[in-house]
Image (cartoon, rainbow, N blue to C red):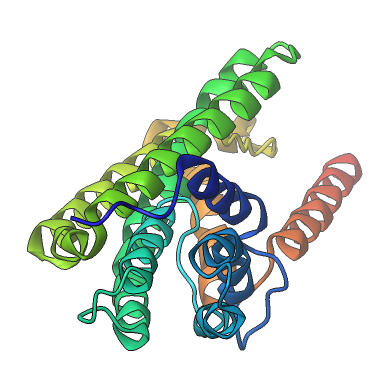
Length: 272
């Protein structure tokens, strides 16, 4: 077996470029392609030091449209680096078309797994812990989230990058087969459960309206709690989901809408 060309320093530099700049120069035409090409530059420099035309060809190859979840998607970067090294070492079975085909084939499944794991599960869990730590106004929760999230993302995605480099094309079956689909579904369910728990714990909405009926004071919130505790927060969560998912309302606009509703509700409470 021929000695490898790439050293750990070059691999680490490629990984750091991806992690720091994976969303650089984004557009609908390329999305993460420029970030991917930037991460491959140290690899191209090492593989084709005396062959500028081959270096140019390699970098152009990685400017094609590319989009996946960046953290878990670091695995694809590692696979691509390993295949590029094999190609540069003269493995005729590995072509530029094969490398691009593997990238395209993996970016969808890895995006599904990554989106379920990172924004769907990891972030809600860490935020719920952080909010609990900062419930009394402490900065500890903020520091916990910043340190824990960045540590998990950095070391986790770094491991995936180097594992992808080691496995090469062998890792394709692992992440595109039936087992990968089952893992994605399981993580999605877990993520939805976590989000539901966070919403139930931290979303509060009390209806302060009261009125008199035949000499009896009626408390609307008490009646709702007797029928369905946390019904108002649940309705607010579903309304938020509907507006963002079905009506394409941005989070900033949604916050503004809720501000107007809250302001109007307080004004009505003072009037009546």
